[in-house]
Length: 438
Image (cartoon, rainbow, N blue to C red; front, side):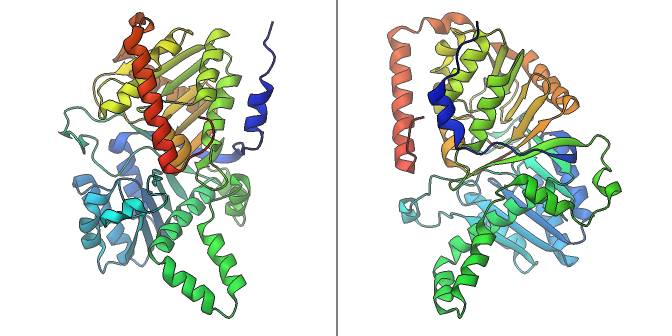
């Protein structure tokens, strides 16, 4: 007999927006910078109007230099080029980026810069820009987890023999409009952060402060409705242009920010896992979900769904590995299978459910991504795309080691580890200003 629904849990999620799917899109799964960067470069080289780029890391290696040169060349052709980078993720690269773009026409904005020691004391500094977006001429968009850095370079460990495992989605169609609105809002928010005092002064002196305030709000607002943004993007395009993709599919662009969409990505995951009938495959480098997420995984496994997690085996941050391992006993004890990826560093954030629902994006399954950072995922309802994601998962799992059940007998040491991780997560979230149960 099916278990009655958890009414308290349903009420908790009821006010959180659900993904809004729109059709007529063409999507391509891209593995690593080896596939993303050439596709991005081709789109930028063919651009005739504008390029918007947002990223957490824009590194000063060969991959970063090549993209910077393409952006400068685009600006030299008269295109509007806007780049926003995170002030922490790209902190070491900022002098180099400023030099690359100086006088080129490329406009660079820094999201929450950390240029003074007291910058850390400002509210919200632990909430970072973690999205990776690129939009070209409202025709092409790229969304995923891949930073602007060579696949074989790790910021903490230097050069690596094997490429980092990561994914992005290249897309065209109506959904590009929603991605473009998000990229513009990120750039405007970063610019506003740099010039907030001047903006307030201009607002106070304005002869029409109300109208100026409305324009300002429109500039910083993320797309509230992907379907509305997509319809605006489709206006004026011919039916042939809208259906030109080889296999037009339904997809949603889902954001996590600190205004309206605080838990939208988390809800999308939990809803998909709750509805799973036979398969949930989730790959992420950083894994420490909250109660509702873990319960969804446990319940799926209990009702006979094959639930597989693929996490880091080669750790870039030991505390992140410790956090994930603190949950192994709980999940293994409920029938969840866990694998650790060994060949290289894992940075991919993908999931496939029942070979009909798949997501690729920037959001990890940890408190930073689910409750603090600005994140962006594409969710796809299409069997062909879901099978492509599933094949990548299977290939990675074949190169991974399966975690055995010795974690079930953690003893006192296991209890202490879980308690320590839970306390650290609690303190971090409270310092960052996150409230409520996690």
